[in-house]
Image 1: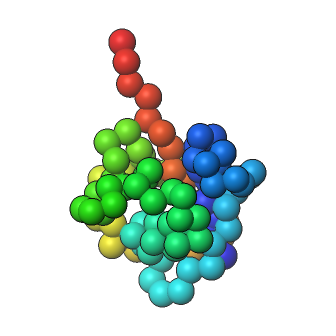
Image 2: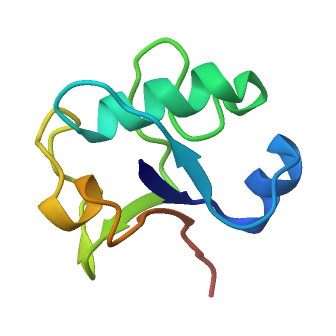
Length: 98
């Protein structure tokens, strides 16, 4: 069971509270987690990554095990702690401004 932490605005959109738990089959990658998340919560389509290109949105970041995974390949296997459910995969809305 993969644990996913969403930012507050996406939790509201998906009508969830707390962590989302996903059953993911196959090698656990960012792409597979996001595919599963969007399949289970179709209202999130296009909010985390572009619907057509599949690329991460500019102000969305991915973290796991205190590491920024945002620029990693979406097909890179995630850390074992995430796969085992010990650590969550965190989707975070980045802040910008001045």
